[in-house]
Image 1 (spheres, rainbow over the protein chains, first blue to last red):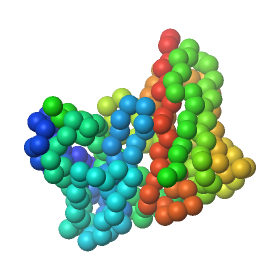
Image 2 (image 1 turned 180 degrees about the horizontal axis):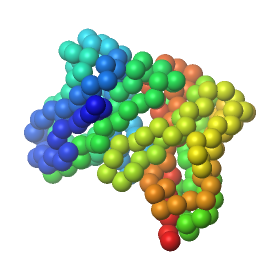
Image 3 (image 1 turned 135 degrees about the horizontal axis):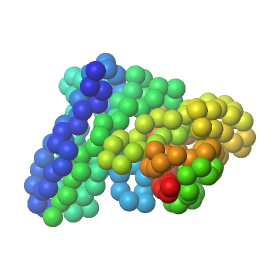
Image 4 (image 1 turned 90 degrees about the vertical axis):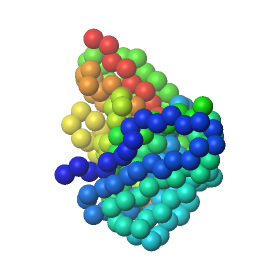
Length: 114
Length: 112
């Protein structure tokens, strides 16, 4: 049972490039989400999805797109990378997204934009 | 939006000491969660609290849901080197549980 798998682990982009961060879970979780982690700021919610075909914005959605065509996958797309998007990105999933349904996190993607 | 402030920001303690950290919110929470992040990994849930005044333990960890519903506390007793990491509080506030808000984290270092 792999849990939440994120790829790649590390990525360096030049300003203006686009890329997709992959996230897959094999726990049949309905809820999936993306967070970014910056020093001194904790984890901030970018986008989330409560089920296939449904996505919504979190706290810091600008510059990112998501889609949820299957229950298992929730890719995060950077449309035109900027240095402010240098961060560690975490994908997380849970059974229902409710407070009594714990979030399971992947091990993160460390992104540097130069 | 909701803000969660954790203190202290960082702690350097000796093995065997007890640790206390807290989290305060600008609004009322109906659930408090405590996560730990080991270096290079994603956060892992330690304790979940669902009721004001609730006190819950998980081994050497004890967490409390403040009676004002705007704060929570985490204590670690007899710390050991593997307690090193960043501890986050989190909660959904009174809005949708899907929008989990995380605190700024408390970084714990344990020296031998």
